[in-house]
Length: 393
Ligand code: TTP
Ligand code: MG
Image (cartoon, rainbow, N blue to C red; front, side, top):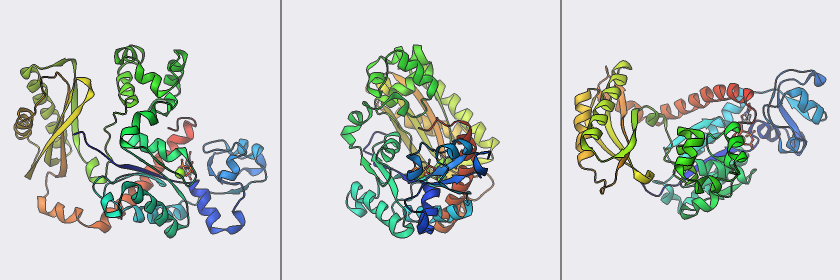
């Protein structure tokens, strides 16, 4: 469903290094490098992060520690103290949880929030962001950079633009003005190789990309060309995914050609319902909310959902709901490009619905799981990051 959204991305500044500088005043204003032991330049392993003072010497995350040592031998080198940073991270998430329950933990120091439904409590969305910054500072004595935008990708880019201690807002109607001057590699998922291909053809900025025909980009980059073209036009429907929302099962189909053929569309929907049902049963899950997704010619995407009091994983039940949603949808004569089926509000197929409800209402347990998830994710990311130094979005 198209609507105004206020998405916030928060990212703590020089996180591990900032915690160490906070704890030890002697380290403030100095280059501090957190990571492997440099062993006088012969050390193996990499830099986890470094203070902004060390960045002036060209040191950065994931750089071999031996190179960091060459660039900045007089820095203070400290090992990673994960327990310490996880405790501070939990405090940050505690502050964030006062602004909205829709929080997606991305890593130990980075999260998305959807404040569309809650900003009014704090006045304006801008004011909510200022309060997020000041409350994090009050509680942790650390600075954070914040981006506010109508989409996740723009919010993430925005939070990075005025680091450290930044706040950048992308207005709802200023999204394209914001995106178009940016280099193409700022687009989500657009890596080094694709950047090279595009640059070779004179496509340097997001605006350059947007102005090309979708078909041209598909010919050049395959299916992802369509996706990047969409992002270049500010179309980014990614939702802020909380723990609960992640627990959904979905499948979608893109038609070879846009279609208005009812039989073809219903056939595709039935096949999707069977797929989703099969996956649910395989994972011993059932769900209460059934969502139909329809993308029309020209990329506009709509969702229609229905929530039942009892959960199901039967294909025929799911299809019955989907068919009803589809029949109630007015495509205004436009062809359909894509259809999708999603089941959410999941519970174990063995559980009584009511037991589950009691559980998810428990805020404490929720917070606990969020912190666990940060730890999990951080581990994964550290491994991923070490191997792909320049793939940072
Ligand atoms: P980042 O938010 O990427 O970096 P940062 O907070 O240190 O600096 P910035 O101000 O640019 O946001 O990562 C958060 C923490 O994750 C960082 O303090 C250390 C850790 N980390 C690694 O251990 N290895 C890595 O490759 C990266 C990028 C981060
Ligand atoms: Mg950070």
